[in-house]
Length: 319
Image (tube, rainbow, N blue to C red; front, side, top):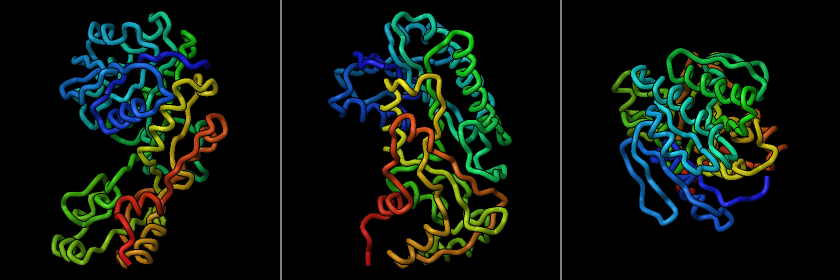
């Protein structure tokens, strides 16, 4: 696809991925164009290449106004386990967006940021690495169902209207000290599991004081393998996908080359920082999100692996 002067609509722009993408786009001299951010309540730091529209994605006139003269959409707006709002945001909002895209002159590409929740995350056992041909399998709850429906809607717009779109399927997104905040028995924990709730309160307090981290075990009793992607790697995939000819009507797994292995992480932290771990049994299943397709077709490469994410979270080695 030939490079053009882009006018990108970003939904969910005030979320951490939205802000990271906007900053990367403006910081890259190769990226020409402007961004229009559709924000529900919060706003963004002013920039002469940024326009902000406030309103609800579920409101058709708001979406039509936001879509005027747009060439690309980066769709990030979502809601978690909120049954009162999730259909308005994930289904109704996406429908208004897709309808506007197909009726907007000069529109180029719709980029959906999906997630491995559409494949069941770690709730279901998979014998093989998960590629883009894997059937959808939402885990219990409305959020995972919404991710399945989003991907399905976009794919049907390929069929019905030959819309140009791309789905970037991302697992758990990490940056900065996120991993350190996850591997703690403290009450302020990032993500799930919430480790301190799985053991006695006094034991959790002792582990926290001794700086002991959890070593997550899967349903088979082996160190858990869990899919993660660093924020920078996801953002780079978005930027590549804006114009790449091979991204048209494709779905890509955007993840580390290997899943995050809690056993390897525990060993690395012990070796480099003398941080001890304790095994924590869970009912969840190890999985491997295969990123081969994105590397082959897009030329994308993740820069972050297990050790680099740990080093960023914990800082310089203290030994």
